[in-house]
Amino acid sequence: MTLSSDRMQELQAIAQRVRVDIVSMVHAAKCGHPGGPLGMADFMTVLFMEHLNLTTENLDDPGRDRFVLGNGHTCAGYYALLSAKGLIPHDELLTFRKLGSRLQGHPHRTPEMGIDFSTGSLGTGLSAAAGMALGARLNGTNAHVYCTSSDGDSQEGQIWEAATSAAHFELSNLTVIVDFNNIQIDGKMREIMNVRDLRAKYEAFGWNALDVDGHDMEALDQAFSDTRNAAMPTAIIAHTIIGKGVGFMEDTSSWHGVAPDDEQLAVALAELGATG
Amino acid sequence: MTLSPPLATGEVKKVATRAAYGEALLALGGQRDDVIVFDADLSGSTKTKAFGQAYPDRFFNFGVAEANMMGTAAGLASLGRQVVFASSFAMFATGKAWEQLRQCVCVPNLNVKVCATHAGLTVGEDGKSHQMLEDITLMRAIPNMKVIVPADATEARAAVLAAVDIPGPVYIRLSRASTRVILGDDYRFELGRGTVLRDGTDLAICACGVEVPEALDAAELLFAKGIDARVINLSTVDPMDEELVATAARECGAILTVEEHQIRGGLGDAVAQAVVKHCPVPMGMVGMDGEFGQSGPPNDLLAHYGLDAKGIAARAEELLQRKG
Ligand SMILES: Cc1ncc(C[n+]2csc(CCOP(=O)(O)OP(=O)(O)O)c2C)c(N)n1
Ligand SMILES: [Mg+2]
Image (cartoon, rainbow over all chains, first blue to last red):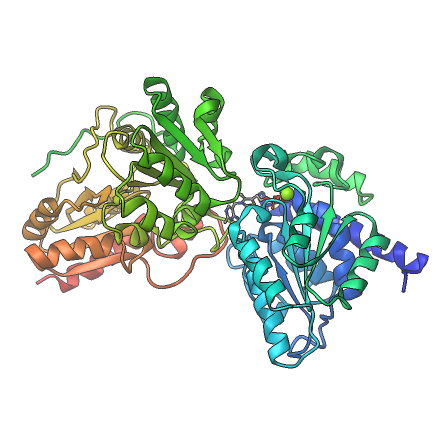
């Protein structure tokens, strides 16, 4: 089933609001990571609004879908989407990273907000997601487990141990979405430590793997639909532009983990169509 | 008793120990061509970047792969020609790569210097996943590993310059936040030697790292209440300066340890082992008592968990109630 053009417009509007939330949260915190989540906003919106079966009503349902933010530093966008789903009051977003806030600098497992797992240490997410997928099978539920990763995260050895075992145990209810933006903290990923062709790697590990334009919502929607019927775990390599939507943050490692000042926030909001 | 080095005087300067590490490394690079530096996608934060730019042939970035970085450091060091400085955040340098450090670096006793930054609560807003509070425990538990927690930028620089000539594995714990420079320029670092920074006989406060300036401030708060505290910088947690601790126990009759770390297995335990062995006296341990940190500004976090001067002074007064 493809997205209607009305629904497509709605999703694009949601992704844009998520971007506004991301820059506003990081600005208010005076620190944090804006670049990654801006680049992920399109695929995260399609996943959270169209596919991830998580709502305020089914929070306690053991059979509901699970989500793990493997690249935990990108949590501003994750919190914004949980807010879009009604799981976090919108006002609370501006407490991000402050002392006593539920919205920690990296996600902390908080069932009442739908945060299923604690992350922040790269390399750990995919194994945890595989454990949830195994549990869903053991418990006889139809839950699907989604996990994000990134090109930087793919440099950790544990990712490839998880990839090996998830294929070995045929965890077809597991999907990893890799934010592939060719950026990590120290610079361009291909210059720092090239992970090369991740689709080919996941395929060689026995996964069902595909490359997708991480800003093409139609293609993303199709990819997420297909993963539900796959016989093996699925890796969606989402090719994105870090900082997408805020020109001066795009395609650079400079905005991986820096907050915009007042002036930069105003420029960013104007570009996102959110002034006034 | 070890003589106190003259403390820094004049204008208050605040410098992060990681910045001093970066400078010392750059200086070492110019002095010795056997110094090799490894990093794991954090060279801007750990401050190894300047070395990497000056000596690109001797700098290797492994990306986000700390276990592989430490294992490779061990292999390189095993040839016996190079000294490898390997850096990441304390969380990942010791957490992700603990077994590589034990099996591949410390068992064969190789010349790898692990210089880990962003230790402790003062990481701040990144929160508990990044606030390493168990690294002293993890490192001092391994035979052959020497554990150094510099009190300020002056000592960090001196310790890094000394480490290159200390045989075998060394762990140097560094901080993200800028903290007060307390030691004077003529301070000399010596492995295994603590120093008395302030004399006193009512109790001894033994601290390391960013808690040393807090301990000095606590001593001032206590002095205003008529309590005369000795303040000792125990920057080498392993090997412990047992003699200095034993003397403090004998002369002061009570010991309070202070660390930006879990009290289980950290500086407090190391001091307690010396105290129990040589001269048992009442002790208190200030540190994280079995909980994780959270996001927040570094100084607010120290205050929240009782690790600032006020918190230390309060615990010192409690301890004095127990002193016979
Ligand atoms: C195990 C571990 N090592 C190091 C870090 C520090 N760190 C946080 S993000 C990051 C870069 C990761 O690359 P990527 O996820 O591709 O970054 P982005 O594209 O979002 O800039 C690093 C090294 C970490 N969080 N975990
Ligand atoms: Mg990236």
